[in-house]
Length: 439
Image (tube, rainbow, N blue to C red; front, side):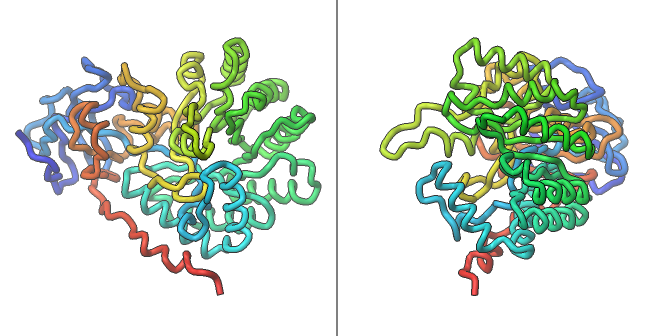
């Protein structure tokens, strides 16, 4: 039996033989599948996938690494993160662990500490972590109250250029939509987003004039060629449901860009008829939905002294069944909104399987951190294994779903352009200077 980890050939053209692939993340290859897993040989040449062949069919003259049925995934896509908030827990914890406590702690920390050097150091630490775990595409939301929007977008743009060969980056401006009528702030925000190639985001609430605010949002996005990514209904309060209004606004304004919504927790608290009407409208509007299961379980339905009764996730299966593009993502990392996390898509996937019941069957579940979020973010070159694409792969010792989901897969191998990378994670001690009280 071949040993793990395999010794990767040092050659421009070689083969990974006897690999197990999640079929839903593979293009240009068909083979009998068991629980959505297929056996194959991968021919890699000049850093790209030259061919996907039936297991055992690879040319014998090529250097080979026998994977012994180990799983091979494409590199991951983390489509909803908050890199600017990350890793402030040690200096600004959330004493209550709930949503109001998180808002207050982040606001205090942002106003006191978020200069360009601080934001850059924490964002880069997060990127090093995600890269080591095997992620190749990230969308981050950036807190965008003035003057923070200028600081964070400038830092983001610089890091996007520096990291372009390792992780592709996108950014959405996060701001409360009650500021959309501010005639000084909002035009400046749009100018900042356009200048740095971002998206317009925002946080919706049940305002009496919600429809008018959404029309302003869609008009601004359309006029400036911007896509939209919103934080929506992040609450267990069933009286809060802005999701349907967003779908109706997209249709009403004939918006041609993409619209993504995150969280949508209160949808799971609705009566069946209300939920179905909302889901149907979201499907009609072609809106994508991303669930953040770890963060929402941490924040939602937290009452001290009482056990939580709700999982905090949206109606994921119902949305997917209606044809809505659905994915899962990390969300916050070691900040007041989520005290834990490491931007590890394997952890996100494993926990999502358990929390949302993405198992039984598991045959298409791998899509939620690979091809589906890549497609939502407009990057069909990411999140899949296909001939002609870069050999950006993650190799695991696990050979089956049971093995994969039962351990953290800490011994994985990450390949970028056909070569194994150094998977050393950054040391938390690197952040110690940022945790000290400012002079």
